[in-house]
Amino acid sequence: MGAFRGGTAIGFTLFLALVFVAARPAVAQDDPSGEWSPRFHEDWPERIPGPEIGDYLGLPINPAARLHGDSWDATLLELPENQCRAHGADYNWRGPSAIRIWKQVDLPTQKVVAYHIYTTTYNQYRTVWMDGRPHPPAWAPHTWKGFSTGEWEGDTLVITTDHLKENWIRRNGIDRSDQAVVHTHLLRHGDYLTVAVITYDPVYLTQPFIRTTDFVLDLQQQINPWPCEAVDEVDRPEGYVPNHLPGKNPFLDEFPANYGIPPQAARGGAETMYPEYQSEMKHMKLLPRPAKKAVNQ
Image (cartoon, rainbow, N blue to C red; front, top):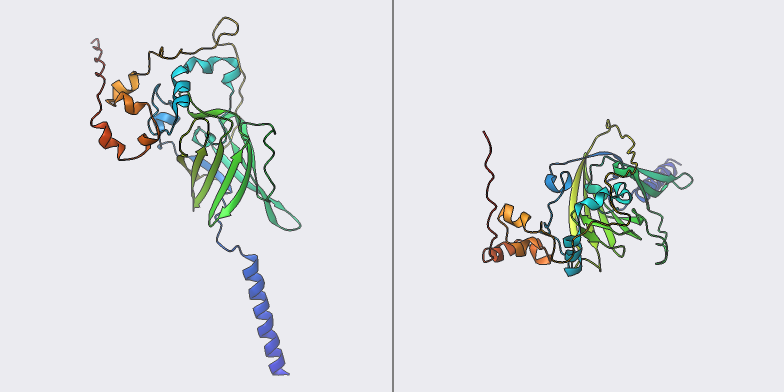
């Protein structure tokens, strides 16, 4: 009887161990849920004051994207229809946004159905479906945030997003088309969250464009609403759209001249993403630096 009881106890222990192992994920998953505050020391000039006109360095763009940037005028943002224009899902991480991420759990099964992501800039909200549902058909509407599904690759949450509206890659006229597909990788390291965004765009990019942004856990942060109301800031003729005709943008040389960068390099392209391009730049001509203005004493 004692041997039987001992065997039963051992069997029950093994049963509990199997249940415990089965209940655990095959690989540890670092849940990205939390309140996250951005680190603005990364790429500060581009993210906050804004990139300079004609700065296409490090962007794997094609001639169509370059022409779009050359034709762009900053006063486009003054038009009422653009004043509250939201960042796209791929760029939204770069804005001045605090982020809240939380998961939706199916109560009967306790499986994670979705992650929800809220970013403060323009009150943007998106859902990342984790239940294996398919993406909508090609003719479905496109939105600023698109349609997202997620899956775990090891300890990294990988999000696939399509059905996006046209938006920007860099806020100086370099666009991203509505045909793009974006893969976002959320990597949590304790109190830090790294967001790696890979944009694939058959219209404007010749290679995938990769950019990372970091956040720190901030459970005490206060997330306030982001009201935005469009107004007529400047009197313009009805239907006028600010622009520069091809070859007529007078500001394109300012960036390479001010920073001592060859104009050819400032034009961007996939080759400018790689370190070996610096050796090629040594043989390129520079524009004369602008004369310094005298300061009245």
